Length: 274
Image (cartoon, rainbow, N blue to C red; front, side, top):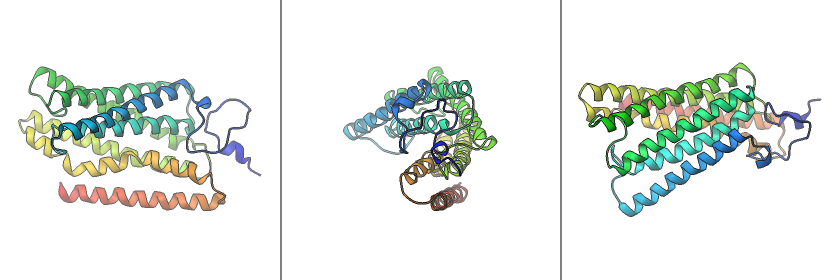
């Protein structure tokens, strides 16, 4: 008979002590330094997003457009949540400790770089992306583009690990992680497409068209990024129930199907409105 206690532990944990009760997030005493750094950094980014939401409410201004307090709000919240999610799910991936630490460190630094660049430009009241008006603006814009490319490489590497070796965790976690990573790659590719087209249009003298070109892909990009958090959290919540493993896996399969349908709908919207 399968040892259920061992099956619910994250992959790669050392030691013979049995883990604590199943919870959506592991106890703080089990957190490695690299993961703890990512959690703290993610919390700071989320706090930055919430602080700029307060700025938006006080200062006013439009939610839309290339110059808006919306950008430090949404990017702070999104990058913070994604960084925390990636640090958490990495514990279930069967990769070496040094490799995990290096990838998480690079990812955390890149998240800070992206949010910092966007926030600085918001306070300067100029666009952060596709802005080539001054040497400084060009430097920020190209740094954000290069940082975005680095994000794609790092997250695709982690996603590949989920498919090369079966992730650990409770029943349904392997499915949730693999589906979440696959959907995440779709979000990364849509983001790369937005940056590539925007930079091309800006470089060819069509800056306004560059800003407008991202609109159709934004829903697909936003929906796809957070499957890697939503689906594994569902698995951990299900692990707290008395349902059988078969029932829990069936629920996860249904959730994956619903999420895939949402992504497909966003993709259709992107094609229709392109």
